[in-house]
Length: 94
Image (cartoon, helix red, strand yellow):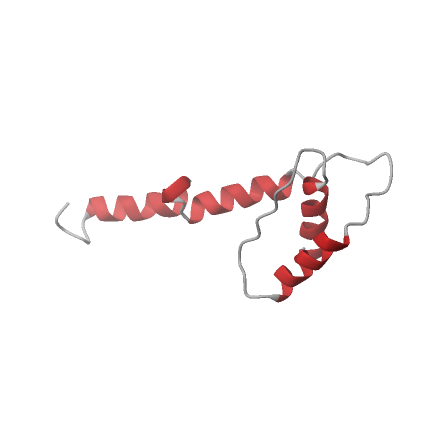
């Protein structure tokens, strides 16, 4: 363990790149896993009606996409359209 270039260090570095870790230990593999799941679950297959226009949300998404931030937090009560809005944002960014 004292050798920074030894086999244990190599194993730890390889695991950090390939084994997902979350929480305080979020690593690249964990981030990729989380984003793949969120992009893959884009809400219900076909809404029974058109989504409601949300100008405040659209304005915040535009500010996020044109600004320097790398992380977007979206909160709201269940049924308020968070998943639908995030799916639409992911589709626009694709």
